[in-house]
Length: 133
Image (cartoon, rainbow, N blue to C red; front, side, top):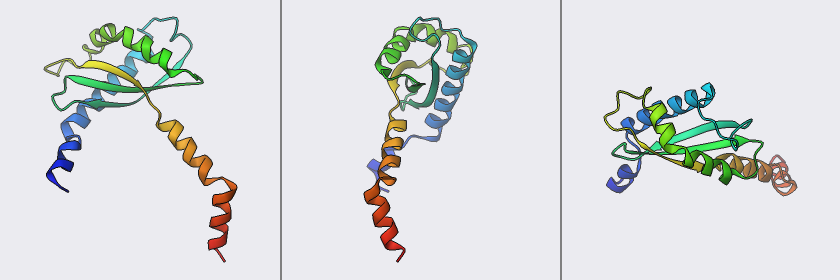
């Protein structure tokens, strides 16, 4: 691994703090502290939190099950970012700086289902069945 590859990989501290922030966000959402008509009745999942190297910016990847337009969910969460930051700060008192939250739609599930459809397509199945002979 070259020096530039190592610089791109998150440090253990970034990973640990990201997971702590994710747990605090999930706990806040489960308690129902965030009241918004766009988010009411939606099942939200915080799939990942990526921290910047200085731990001042947290990129939060969310998905909502049964929702086609994730941008409305992301915009609603972004509009409440300061409120969320204040509520989560109670659970993250050990951090020197409370990170700024940036919300993004998680597209990894879409990618997984696309790959799954490709693997189960007749063309791929035919190629796999031909290898067994």
